Image 1 (cartoon, helix red, strand yellow):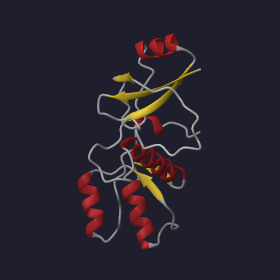
Image 2: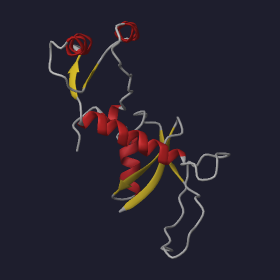
Image 3: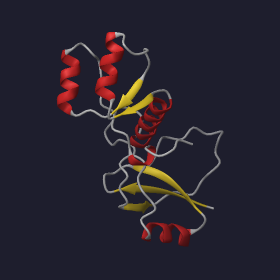
Length: 152
């Protein structure tokens, strides 16, 4: 099993697991390796250090993708990406997808014509502005392509 650090053209850092280096190369050539944040297939392998079992020692964070110049103790970029993906997964698992009927459905919920529940769907910026003017709180949430399929 080959576990490698990867990054996309936008600097998102993530981990990939492959049967071998040849498997990684084959999947990359076929466009099967994509960033879980932005779905870019322009992905390259990052140099990674050997794994050391030093649980009794506290080592400084030298995580690839760490925020240079960030406050001490601030999460690394990779940690922020992981938190974002976890939050998006949570929203997807705990909301009902009403698709293109989103605007109509949230208006119905707001008026009490539909059961109150957490919903998500599609709306353009103009529709979002209209909903906010009506006192209906909505929030855009970009969902990475990799999470738009079935959740596992």
